[in-house]
Image (tube, rainbow, N blue to C red):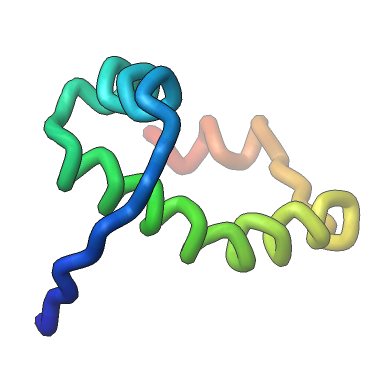
Length: 67
């Protein structure tokens, strides 16, 4: 995997809050944030399916399969 060394200017309070949330250092916190941004399109597509996919379970049948 190729990597790029970058310089970014971010508000210190935002970085501190993000690091507190991740419990990681600056590099891993920024990587995690970038992963979330990159996954945003997938989240939006999945959210768009809400109510469009019919899913039903027959609880009685599921319980019988456990036996």
